[in-house]
Length: 413
Image 1 (cartoon, rainbow, N blue to C red):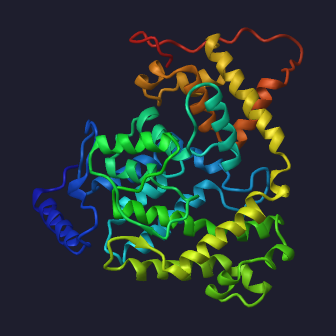
Image 2: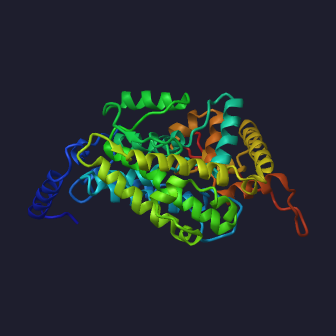
Image 3: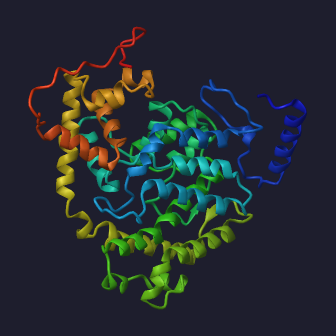
């Protein structure tokens, strides 16, 4: 059904009026840039950045967030954070910061929802192992922010806007920044230069103020949450909390052990207000010096007591072996053209994968992308199916037919 022109006209006027209240540094919907623009736009009902958020949510890569762990892998606990919750938290925190600053909340939401799609099984530990394998096989290093762009822009060809892809590419929650200012020009050449710099091990700041908000919200979102999860699963205890930084206990008003039960609420309340106060009418998105020092100390505490905790890493060598074994096996499946293997059925021949990508990607790139897209459970399942012999009950099954071939191309369908 088409919306009557009289109604759509008034809706357009209302949208223009709302945008007039945005900050001068906010990204306007009319300034969106798409590479191809081959899909229709309906800016009155679904402005371009809102549409991007929808495209991300409906992507296959987004659906796999559901079983990608944030920090604590191989733990059966429904109350700890997974990626699917983390990106929603970043979106909520980002919009909470962006609203009083007069920024484009649709753009913040889209960047936040897509920023971690490139994360691999077993979080940052798995990322390190996949990075080693990519370098060993000549496909460059591995960075999950680059992979997020690759999934959304190359594999699935979601035709997202430049502003959203730039924000996803330039998020970096592992690096601490007291202040973030926009960087680069609104063009695909500038985006390509940033991509090349990050692939080479460097860093780049976002093109938009909204991208800067997501980058800072990413850090804010996991500080208290990771600590709360660590207490939930017993990775840390009272001995660890005794070493919690003094400037953090002061800033968050922690006076005793019981206060850590609501550490995430205290962190979000204090830091969001701090960012808004420091960034209001400023040309940057920033922490105050006091809050910045606290965030840096908090990250260092989490690194020493949580992320590098032997209790968390005791399966590290087993997981490394799994990554190495699967990478080699996937390469073998591709080189031998085993079309009944998982990499063919779930990636190369999958109908949702761009034909331009599947036809041109090198074997090591296909192995990288297949593993990076796996959930933790699917990673374990593929490993088990690959390494364990299959039993039959009474007789050998008939040969399984291979995938059908699309007559219009050489790709499987």
